[in-house]
Image 1 (cartoon, rainbow, N blue to C red):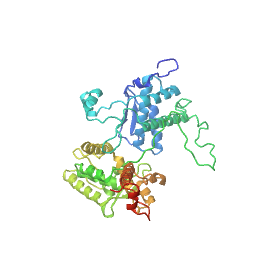
Image 2 (tube, one colour):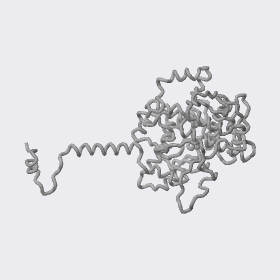
Image 3 (tube, helix red, strand yellow):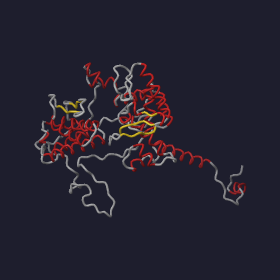
Image 4 (tube, rainbow, N blue to C red):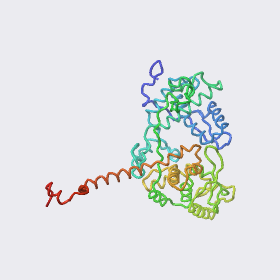
Length: 428
């Protein structure tokens, strides 16, 4: 800190060491644990994670919360302030640092074993890496920027405010939450004095919470999806894409399916929903089951485990391990590298939603059930035209305007065109 009030004068150049880590324990009761630079468990986060698990939050949510808490603890360790003594000054400067500082360079685990520095890895990959923030020539999606995205900062603010609210209620933290509510929320509760005759209006929550731009679901056009499908190398990957784009299931939901969940005769596959953890059978296309059968025959010939209770998706080589989300994303990224695109696994869900929602013979409530949306308003966003369709329609509009301007004006009914040409001097 630079002066007596603890103000961080230049957050952009403030260095936060990458110390401490979030460990995956592979234990059901404690899937993740946050440890300090000495390798000791950070007890306040462990208690918070246990409360999240008691509230039926999945392990993926605990990991997401843990990454935000790791950033906060690293900042506190850098400014040498204990978590109980953190005030709104630290919360304010952390929010400023998160907005202005560059994201740390990540080093692949292979390079970590070889002892290669992050700067050296960045220099090696610079020719292949897209310029941050520039749109991809194939998909139009901007490449990840060097700064933390607004969605990341908003999620971090919400997690930290919830973390301190929890310890405030338990009496184990500071008496004032370092991440306060917005000044307009003086009553504390949202819509505390709402008039029942008026409609609800959006209200800001956290004082340091950034405004998040509205996301537009991005689908994969049919011709680009065919190119992506053709770029895949293995039948297992083709089966995964066929199921994702026909069921609309989330990536991690499909990866939870087991062999007993597949019913080819009924064209159904069972998945476990992300939020409710409810089991649901969803319909899929015929070709998805064909690719799945081809993939299973190949895997079984190589000695992959089989049985009703085994997972449906395995790695491609020994030792056989269930396919996880990170491996599935790496599979898609290999196809992206061949095409020069940057599609994501969630784009497949958006593509399935667009295809179903734009079908006039399929009701929107049916689409809502297949996608597992709690509210119909969430499904309605897929009724609007996509960005590609809007651009195509506007370009067609400009083309029609140019053709109309190039054509000679048509005389009104009752007038002789030849006489008008002589009258206005247009006769040859």
